[in-house]
Length: 150
Image (cartoon, rainbow, N blue to C red; front, side):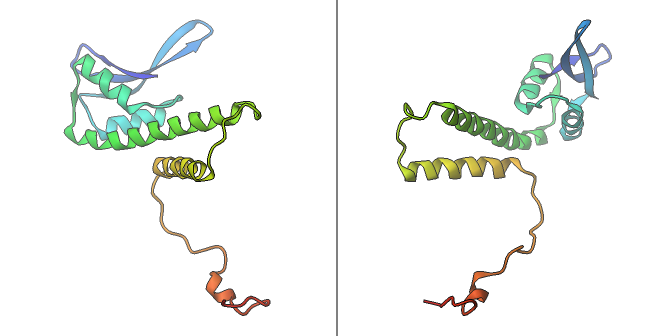
């Protein structure tokens, strides 16, 4: 888990703890005077574990770090990540339950849960450019191979 510590020279560091054969060690992911997008992005890229922005922000506040007001826009990203993790855990819990004892779920409810999970997955992905369809448009297939328009 990443956390923030204060240095003597007025700077702060985002660090990550890890266990080694010689005991716990911490490594610096990023140094900063003001916690901003650049320092958070650098730390997240260097992290070897899941990077929890909410925890880093809370740790930074406890350490007395100044936090860039524009950084709060990243909270939506952190919330989307948290929603994705929660949906993944729910899916794993449901699928690991033994079959006969599993509660019956209405198909409509199951579909809504699946759509919520798909939304969480999509929200956690970076935006990307639209791509052309890799399959033919169905309207072009009408009249082909005995298909009719009715």
